[in-house]
Length: 223
Ligand SMILES: CC(C)(COP(=O)(O)OP(=O)(O)OC[C@H]1O[C@@H](n2cnc3c(N)ncnc32)[C@H](O)[C@@H]1OP(=O)(O)O)[C@@H](O)C(=O)NCCC(=O)NCCS
Image 1 (cartoon, helix red, strand yellow):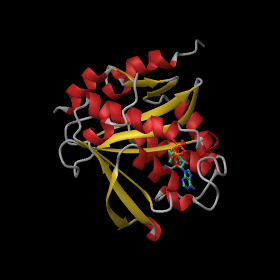
Image 2 (tube, rainbow, N blue to C red; image 1 turned 60 degrees about the vertical axis):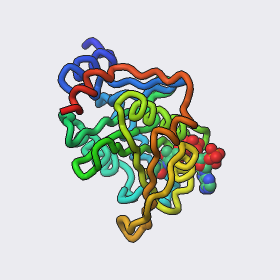
Image 3 (cartoon, rainbow, N blue to C red; image 1 turned 90 degrees about the horizontal axis):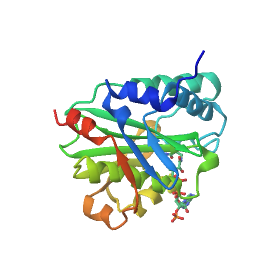
Image 4 (cartoon, rainbow, N blue to C red; image 1 turned 90 degrees about the vertical axis):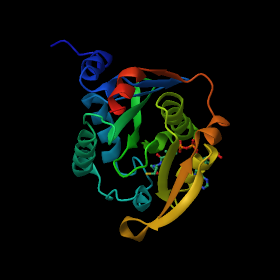
């Protein structure tokens, strides 16, 4: 049977779900809506013990159970499949696989929920542990903000992290976020909530981020 090219599949999906037409690229890293093949690559990372966080530190992932193997892979896939929905003005989700060197290394999600004020977007992301700590997390966040502020007209981006998740908090701080408040999260973990404005992001903006496929998505979320 002929192999289906991932970008052809994305183009077919984009005709129905415009989030699959989004593409953000910077210095060899590409963010695109994940195909099932890419989700399976990511599920294999999630299934690996310590694939995303050091064993014992799963609480930092705010609600991720500390399981591994097939149960963790299925939980990840079902969560990722539930993110696939028609985007609208009230609620939309743009899950984006982090592709580098032809491999899916992590997942980033840009979203807007019905309880968010107009113009506010949320971000979340994770990378395979083997890929952490070399600046990719910060670049991915700045790529998401380029899409949100530079192309979707967002006025504020928010995120949250467990108070002991030093890498995530540092990435947020280095992208211009400020803490807004703290709240008790799952399992009693203290969650730090942070926000960034376009002005604060602009001072840290990456040069040469390419963003494509925005028009159809922007039309869909305009309502
Ligand atoms: C959070 C995450 C996406 C960041 O990506 P990354 O590629 O590791 O981040 P970067 O390398 O760009 O930057 C990490 C920063 O945190 C710092 N850092 C990392 N661990 C640290 C620690 N234990 N104490 C203090 N600083 C730390 C690094 O020095 C770096 O700061 P610098 O740029 O000033 O040197 C990634 O670590 C990850 O996927 N973690 C697991 C999932 C997760 O926690 N997701 C977010 C919350 S749900």
